[in-house]
Image (cartoon, rainbow, N blue to C red):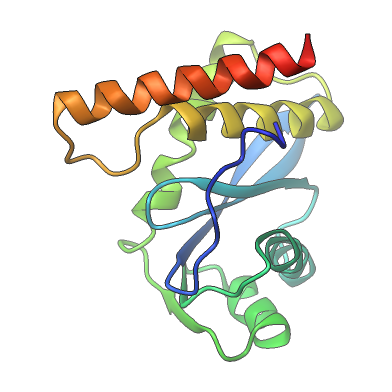
Length: 172
């Protein structure tokens, strides 16, 4: 999964942050996710809470992983994001609106489909390991943006398959 992550961070990036509830063994857990403006999943973390401390943990982890702060973050109406952003990156612009965060909301759909196929997740650690690999592979194969010609999409898939073969050949 580490070898498949290929998106270089940029100061122009816009991060869309969102959380979704996942039930594991009858207990609620929250999957916190950060997606950039192109739809690439930047990071995901599973936590038992949905509060400022959890949001802060996601932001700190994102900054450490990306190395650069974004130009703007976009979230839903959860107030924990604003409180965490004030502590971690006060200079970054924050927009909180229900309609602006569709990019992050839509990024949950492939995971939900896979969750139904797998008939749920059995443990928190298994979910965390699964999403880290699942998102890296999905980022590799799904072309950024929607308005591309069939040829551009075909070339993207050929390059993705070549990179996949190079990574999996290095492991085997």
